[in-house]
Length: 173
Image 1 (cartoon, one colour):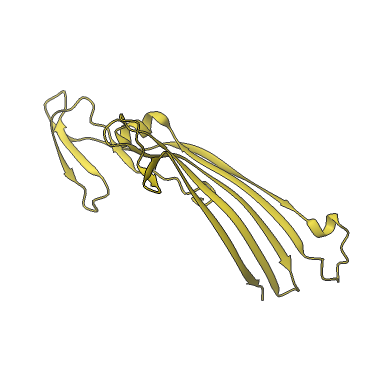
Image 2 (cartoon, helix red, strand yellow):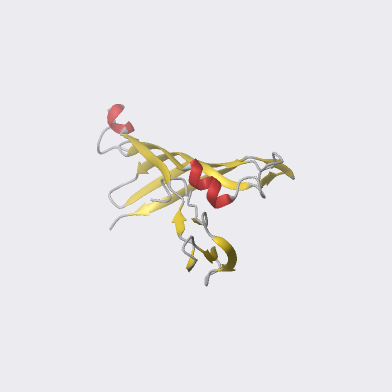
C-alpha cells in the first residue's frame, strides 16, 4: 500500500516522559535510539517506543475511452483506457512532533501526495502498451529558524517534487 499512499512512512518515537536519570543508546539495527531511565517507583526501565500514526487514502478512476468513442471492437482503436490516481499519506501532528523533535534540526516530511495519469493501448490479446505520468510531492515542516531539510538548486524549500514518466509493453500469456 505504500505506493498508493505516496510512500510516506515514519519510524517510531521514544516516549520518555516521566523517566528520570535517562541515558540513550542506539538500537541494534541503528534505526532508532533507545532511552533507559528510572520510573516513579525507582525501577530501571526502557522507555516504550510508539509508532507515528498517520492517515491517508487513495482513489483511482478508470475510463474506457474506446467504448465511449464507439470504436470498432476488432479495429485498431479498440483498446484505449485511461486511469487517474490520487493518494495522500499524512502523519498525525502530535506524534510527528514527538518523533522528529520539531524545532531542533528541522523535521522531515509530514505529508506526501501522489498524482498520476496512465493510458493503456491494447494492441491485441497478448500485447498492451502503457504510458504513465506521475508526480510525487512531500511537504516538510520548517525548524525553529524557518528552514526545511530539503534543498532545490541550493536553496531551502519545504516542498519536494518528483515527476516520473514511464512507458513500456505489457505481455499477457
